[in-house]
Image (cartoon, rainbow, N blue to C red):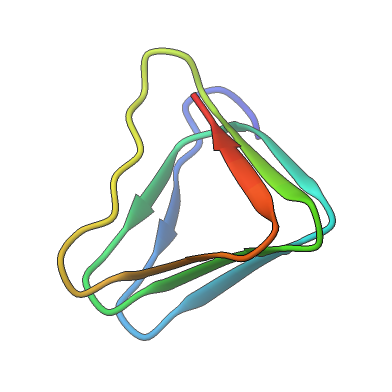
Length: 68
């Protein structure tokens, strides 16, 4: 992702990372959103950013990883 780009998963939204890599990520999950990482998918979080899953959101990490 480009610098200063934010990916927001809104309430009711779903993002699936399937056997791919999301680089330099700044992801915001809203309550009621769903993030699924499968088949060796990976998210590399942008430096100086934090990743958190708010109450009411779902993180389904089947086979993959999230790297700070």
